Amino acid sequence: MLDSVVETLRWQFSEQTSLDTAEENYTSVLAQALGAKLRELYAQDQSRGEEIQKLLTGTDAASLRGVLLAPETSTRVLWNHPGACDDRDIWHYLDDVLTIEQIRSGCAREDVAIRSFTSWSALGDFFLSEEGIIIAQTPISGLVIDAASPAATCFKSSNALDQSLQLSCYTDLSLKAKALSCFQAAMDGLEAVDIRLAAFVRKFTRVANLIVDADGRFSSGSTGEYVGRSIFCNAHLPAVDAGILAEALVHESIHSLLYMHETCEPWVASDDLRANDAVVVSPWTGVRLPLRNYLQACFVWFGLAEFWSMAHGSDAFPGKQCVARYKAAARGFNSAPLEDNIASFQVQISAELLDKLRLMQSLRQDPDGRNNAKCANL
Image (cartoon, rainbow, N blue to C red; front, top):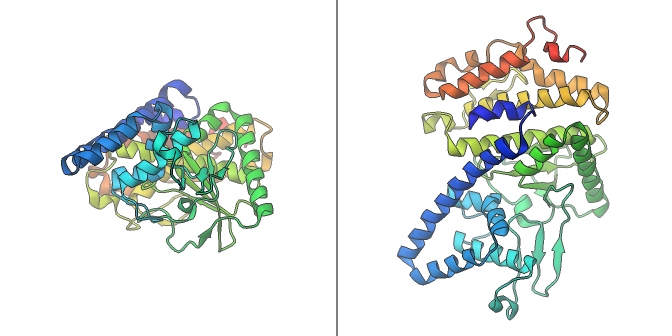
């Protein structure tokens, strides 16, 4: 899979090949893991296993795939995480979210029609109350938005996201409208730069959580425990423009692609190297990072440098913003060799991954200090 990652992050891919391949490989891993769990259920409770199997086979392929790829599903399937917002086991959860998809598509099974049913969809974009009231969040340029479900603000991760965040859903609808408007402008800008960029963001952002953080600053984040969930806090703030949010969308969607890759093909040989110990200094920010975060950062900054390089040739975002953000993204590639920062870990890191670090640095490094000849005009 790494063979196509650098090409993808140069935004020169064929949409129907590299992007689909990455997602298909990940989907296959999820399906196999779910199949193994279902076999275990059959061994423990055959009747319940038959019920779940009937529910799975009774759901149309597109809905089933969407549920399988949902972050709330993958965290249960791959990490045995029961969900931080409720105590449903995976089978109760699947029963609920697959039933919701059947209701949404208008083909719910007969027993659903005669009982009260309350639940959110797997992506948090659709809710059915006991009174039969449906609340649905319209996607933005094909991007699924969750701004109201419990999962949008209630999750736990041992990895990327700051556990001190005080998250909440929007209660001021005017502020929420501003945030949604900024998302629309960001997606419009990505479309104007290159339709492949927007397609990438849509594919690898399974759901965008549009929420409020009490610290009053804009931030975005994601984690490998909820693959495809991108979290955007305080996008309503006046300081957040289309360019800032567009970069955040690209940034988190690249992480999603990399999380999928890591799930299929581990980057490091030892679980110890996946720990959160801050062991590497980032040449972009000067912040000490865990090894895994550093390796992902190399790819993310490469993709962002390519993005801002392309954006400068369009009218999608202000020229000064393109220049400033390109220089920030390219900075680390003009430092010492990226692999030197991880020399003590190299024997346990995939040789292919190290090759890709060298390739990205050679493509982005300018020996004359001008941040790469391709972008000398920046």
